[in-house]
Image 1 (cartoon, rainbow, N blue to C red):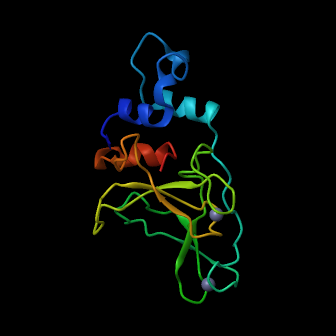
Image 2: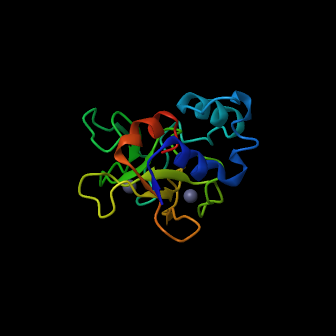
Length: 167
Ligand SMILES: [Zn+2]
Ligand SMILES: [Zn+2]
């Protein structure tokens, strides 16, 4: 499944109940991106994320805080994150992006964080997957549609999806 349009994104996020309930409030015209933002804020507020340094799941020491470069070309520019203080290994982004409470549950028993493979050097660019949103476990699961195919985001939509905190 390729997410190329707003309609694709709505179908992906809301499933079959979209037509009658989800975008009800703005009936009478085609939904736009701000409608979807309104719906998500109201119906599906983001799950929490770590706001202070977590213990590193590799070495147990308190994680270091860092921020991705503003020139990051994978839709991750300027994101705060935690990393291992000894090896520098990435642990988790310290933000609400992708923290859809309906995501599958990680090994900690929490709803996971939706992320996207980069467009540079990735085997399947724009592929969605899930990780632990607290950064405490190694959970990883690919996002697949009902037919078992990867859910892949079109490059043109990355900024919109990031703004809506969908990824
Ligand atoms: Zn560590
Ligand atoms: Zn976890």
